[in-house]
Length: 157
Length: 345
Image (tube, rainbow over all chains, first blue to last red; front, side, top):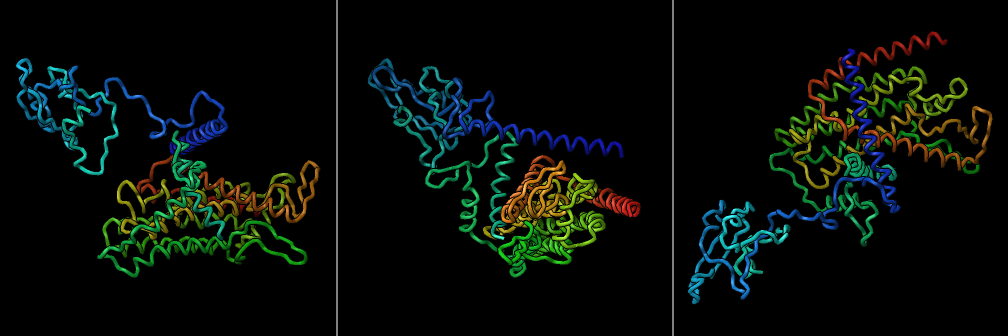
């Protein structure tokens, strides 16, 4: 019986904690409503589409292909990214380049974001620094699946 | 009546906001009219409009007539109880005296208890008529829960009825306007603290919300209204909030003096320390309506707080709680009340 009364006290204490949170946060909200700055905000959440947090430096976001100074893609079609990709979402097709120094350039470079898991292995594997994932583009939802298949032109941006 | 419906509508908003503020969030604030948000105050209307345009789906395997009847049954029985609640004293306009209470029944308390119990029929019926496993589980749980709290709910009020020997709400509220020892308002909670606690716990069980939401049980069986959609589901949700409101009204009326303001008589304030502040009848009634609403609001707030703080009782724990804890406590309460009353006499 005494144990049960102890439980009851703890239950009441629990509700006092939530009630304290309520009143403190309500007070802070009211202060903020009248544009009085407080040390702590009433809510720990961020109003996402209006307010955004800065994206971390190492965050892996939408891919992009890098270019040479003359505007040609840096990619030499070594197929390392295609090999390493765990979700097999990259498709590369080679074409012959007249320049003997380069020899090959991609005529097609398709990343299927329907399958991509954003592991970043392609970036790690690339010997030419031709692909990066630093566009900070994170809102990639589309209405059509076809729109999520990105080709060479889109990736070169 | 309309006022209570609007209040119930806004309880949905209050619940979302309060739970959000409790958990350091902001809550629904996107609904707007012409870009005016005003902390999401239009959210209930947005919800209602959404509900109107949803498909009203009746599954093939359900018993059609009962399936359609159940939500209305549930809603109706909860709605009629509101008529018996007095929300202010007599309003005098010239010679006419208007009672601010829709239905002044002699058996007010019994009526409300009976109707609240009947509303559980809606739960059981929907569980049965939907003809699916989860709803049946939910409905039967509702029945089992009814058995375990209803006795305590009724017995906890016996002490109160012994003190104010009447079942009439208006008479109960009037006798709570008297002062005890010259300064303390003679509210039910002062005379019956144990009865208040028992009634409060049983009433939360009655409202079928979280610490006792066995019929619904969002995390396991999703409850008796699994097969409902659109406006009928909305009716169940509305019944839920209506019940919260009614329990707030009952607690206010029975234990916290209803519309009585401490030391306020029909002609103004009479303070126990000698001061007087006379007011006209209209002003007194307005004050009483205001204070009644404030009290009800407070109890709604308290119930939402409880709903968002505690986890759910297990099935057998609720049974134990009802039969082994609340009912004996009720009997003790009745015995103590009887002894004290016979001593005072």
